[in-house]
Image 1 (cartoon, rainbow, N blue to C red):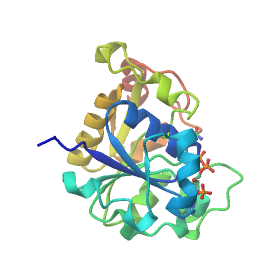
Image 2 (cartoon, rainbow, N blue to C red):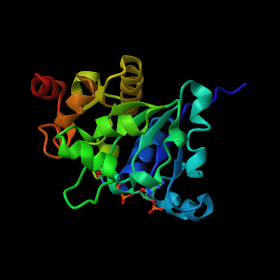
Image 3 (spheres, protein in one colour):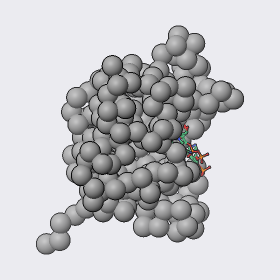
Amino acid sequence: MEQEQPVIGILGAGRAGTAIARTLLAAGIAVDICSTRAPKALRHHLKIYAPGAQAVWPAEVADRTRRFGPGTVVLAVPQEELDEVEPEWAAGCVLIDATNRWQDELLPGWLQAAVDEQLPTSMAIAGRFADSRVVKALNHISHHELPEAAEPDLPLAQRRALAVASDDDDARGLVMGLLVRAGFDPVSVGGLPAGRLMEPDGPLFNRPLRRDDILRAAG
Ligand SMILES: NC(=O)c1ccc[n+]([C@@H]2O[C@H](COP(=O)([O-])OP(=O)(O)OC[C@H]3O[C@@H](n4cnc5c(N)ncnc54)[C@H](OP(=O)(O)O)[C@@H]3O)[C@@H](O)[C@H]2O)c1
């Protein structure tokens, strides 16, 4: 019997979500992806921006990935829209928070409260998605660069390094394994508070990093 591929769910099929989908698909990882549109309406968009990804309803985004363990779902919806994302869609899963805060976004109250307290947004997201294990990752590289930056044939030390932050060691390890398979050199920066380093005003944002650059920034 043919071995089933692992599957990752992606919430959001815009620039980030489809770039992440293309990167995973190129590494032989299947992708279920959703947007505000019905799957039928999303399919044409995916033919162009993420060929091979399967369009699903948001409430189904974790169904297939859960067959391979806890399941892994990427959050790639703008932060201003997060009140419309039901935490139960990713319940029980590892949730990769790939989102960023932009100055002009009107944030949901629970997220704005964290920003006002100068907390990293992923900590508020972990509070909101309390039934998921949140890992901050994939937010600090642009969709323009992500698919081409993946180089699975190179040794780890020669690959682009990506930072990973989580309070959950198992979840962080799982995401680091996924990033290795996708063609990166993942580097743990510690718990979710360290996700601050990866935010738009942090030292790791949107820079072509190697492992040592991340370790130096993480101190
Ligand atoms: N752009 C980048 O290079 C980049 C890189 C890393 C991280 N990020 C972060 O990723 C997040 C998304 O950015 P983006 O540039 O991809 O935005 P975008 O191009 O505007 O795409 C947003 C996607 O989210 C979907 N969406 C909105 N509300 C939803 C809901 N309730 N349920 C399911 N899907 C929903 C949209 O659906 P429709 O298509 O139906 O409108 C769209 O597909 C932001 O926080 C951003 O900072 C962006």
